[in-house]
Figure 1 (tube, helix red, strand yellow):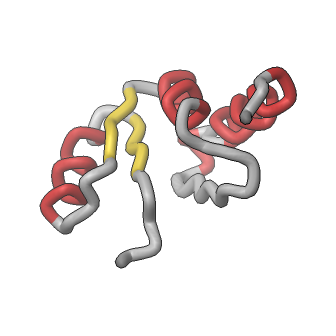
Figure 2 (cartoon, helix red, strand yellow):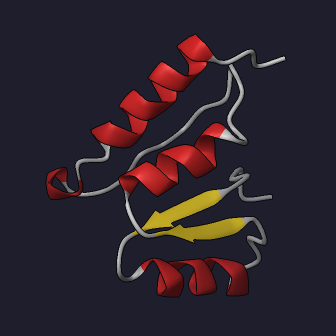
Length: 79
């Protein structure tokens, strides 16, 4: 167990990242075109108490994904 439940890769090289993750044994991995798509995908599977690591360069503006998730939690019934 790697301690990782899901990988969401973003951008042009996301497909290659997902392929590498799957070949390493992480079956739950998906590629997203942009931060909005990543936020939407994550909001479907992240629940209160989950830990989400957003890793990338500052240029990737991954704070947008975090902001999307925080807003979604405030508006959604997570039960």
